[in-house]
Length: 289
Ligand code: SAM
Image (cartoon, rainbow, N blue to C red; front, side):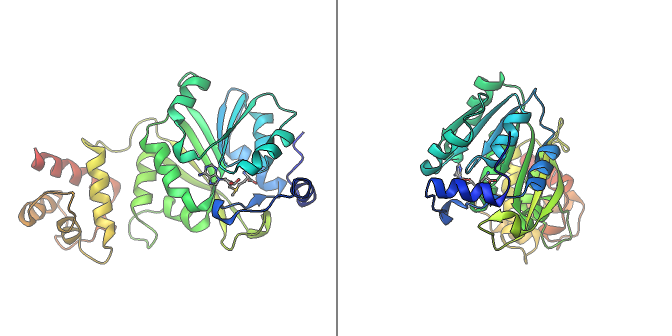
């Protein structure tokens, strides 16, 4: 039975092992059963599923995952947590703890070996210092994924969900929305964690699109264009693209591409939709041929 989702039992485990929190690893452990149940329900984990958990900590959410999934792989960077996990997960025979940095793990291989290459579910209370590289790594490496249900900083969850014309809209919004449908499923206050983070948190579910929402000839080029457009937020799209060393087009050609897109020449990148970025990328791709 899952036993760790409350402050008393968490403190007992921490004391038993004389565990010291490491700030550099973004360690804020969940101590609220309602939040844990909400995450498992939102992730829709069933006995068919292979789940990858990033950063199990002392194994609080891992216990819930083991009870609901067919198999769980939990990747934890902090070696001091490994003996604790051996203890707290000793009742479960469907979990494998991997002591490694998630950014170095070959997740494609893991999905292939443990799930026959079929789509996996990712569920995690993420270390906030590497939220973006983790999410982008999962998408860009084309790991077979069904959904990613994660606790992130509230502000980052907002950035993933918004569209053009809002202050939070940026390269992360476009990347996430190109690959998946984002839905915030819960807002979580600091008192649900130990120690308390100094920011609000939210659980967001990213459901992988079965078909990409826009047709792009060169995905990498589109993301170079998106990054260039948001690098200098206060500048026009034309200036952003002109100043990007990895977009080798003359000022005139960039002007021509923006004209072909059919938007105002002084438009800012932050006003463009994903469809428009895809179209612009296809126009530029043709010019570069
Ligand atoms: N899942 C636990 C919970 O909800 O109570 C802990 C979540 S805590 C926010 C983040 C966890 O990720 C910590 O256990 C931390 O040590 C681990 N972590 C940090 N950086 C990591 C990395 N690069 N790779 C794998 N795990 C990491």
